[in-house]
Length: 111
Image (cartoon, rainbow, N blue to C red; front, side, top):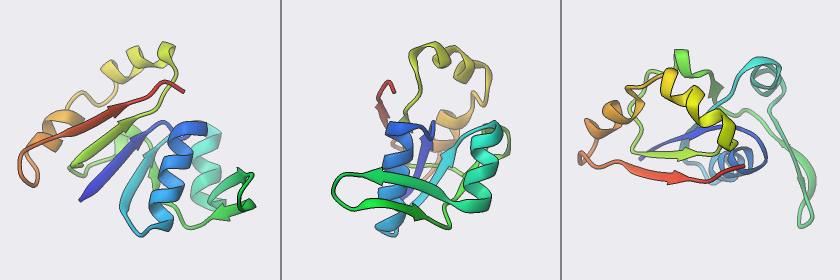
């Protein structure tokens, strides 16, 4: 199963990091300096249970370069960024619907 996490902040970054550690096929969508830093250095986690550590490597890209067909999409962006998603890659959900068993599982959480 392929997972896509749109938004790599506190919520999406944690989901993506934990799923990567569990060996899941997951890609995080980010942009700008945060994306570049994750690609080069991994994703830094600050936790109360395990302390501070880095998940590296972690698969991260921007929406324009994501070309897979996810089965599950986690939308983890701030409310004011939802409009940006509409104008980004509108076919992400359509592509997902064509993969696997044809069902798309979507989780929306506001960061």
